[in-house]
Image (cartoon, rainbow, N blue to C red; front, side, top):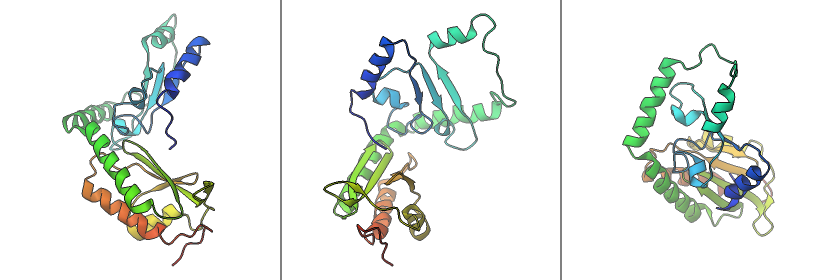
Length: 221
């Protein structure tokens, strides 16, 4: 959950174009509204050649993934004999129907805008309630993707020693709030339908655990 500068991906695109290299974006997590746009590519103002997606396309109601290709890539794959491949359940009609309805719900309920506004509110609450804790180094977010970086020293950003039991496990077990670990950060990817009340409950629950963590890595009971 490291947020690149605004010009990072456009500059990567320029370098790849200069050398004739395709840009493939893994948007399994970021696509379909997570960052406040349909795709993170739009948010970071870059046009990829290929996008790999899953998860948000059906909101997890049924397994489905999709590979999105630019016309110039598709033309190459379809030339001559094409690109022979296939899967037993490729293009399953039930999964595709769920995806279409799920995308319609996201659009109808304006969840892209919700991801932006609720994500900003959640970030604000995290800053307000966790920002003073000695083990919190930085809080990062793009839409409804957020990370709370854990440190042993706020000045040097030395990572917090890995705790046993792992902090995400403690938070889930004690509060019911679902977080996951990513290196030395606690990552939040809540539902795009989250309310401000639920956001406050999440932050309060996280503080109940994090305020007991010492920079040494000790978790007080």
